Length: 162
Image (tube, rainbow, N blue to C red; front, top):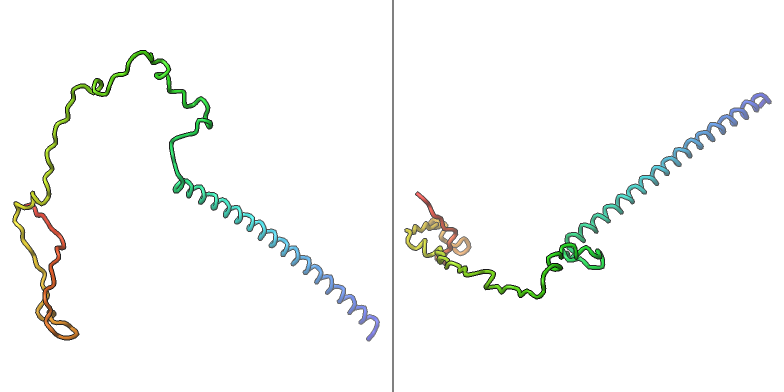
């Protein structure tokens, strides 16, 4: 091989090496960008999971935890005494009225006895509709012996207004 061919090959190798370096650099940048996007997405998903777990805990607490309208006096000092003006201005020497005095002479009227359903329906005519099995199905399918009536079952009762 001649010197010029060797130089041409060397130049071609240098150019190939340089293009490969550029390709590797561009792929490295792409991989870094993809890794960064993946990390951001993972962080966002972890935050969403944390928020959802917090919401679930809050809702479970609201649904299943004990609830009461009572508050501790230490939480809101002075707040519970806002509406005690009547007790503060009452004269303790005055005797409180008894329950009978307050209610007076009211007497409750006796209620009518409720009519029982059976008593109401006892006066109405009853029509029983029996559902019977056809003759060809009254024999046992295994041993072909005639089947007997075992019992009777009330499915429903209807009241028809005419």
